Length: 207
Image (cartoon, rainbow, N blue to C red; front, side, top):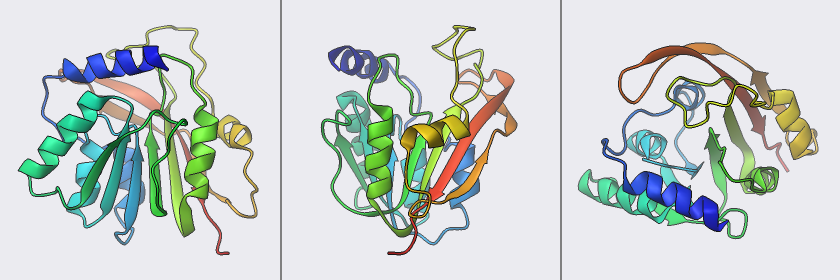
């Protein structure tokens, strides 16, 4: 875990862009029509998703491994009047996991340069859902020109592969959506490219 901590902490210490901007489009697509509740943002980074949710009335627990990301988001939330709706927390998942129950857990591009027990974390996230709550997992399905990973041999798990790895009881966590949509994306410096997202959406069934 130490290498992951160092990598991500350094990444966000060097971040020079604005905090809290540009929510991920698949989150917007899924959550836009949902009534606000309690949300968990896994790997919150610069906080675009957490801020977008908070501005729509959600109470958001925003989690990242990088202390610099957590500190940056906390400062931004306080400065924009969202400090009472966003709770940034540092966790080395899955060693520690945020407390509480959630109506929505979002894991957007929840990858790392260092191997970690991702499936274990996502299973914990599924268990943290309230009945009727949603777990949204959006993974890269292709390599964008601005990605830190430019290995052409990278295998991106399909939604079916992610679901199989999670190995959750389909009667308790039925699949709502699994697809691989393509979209036009804009990079950090205005680059434009067509990318693929691998989307898995699960709902916790009523008890």
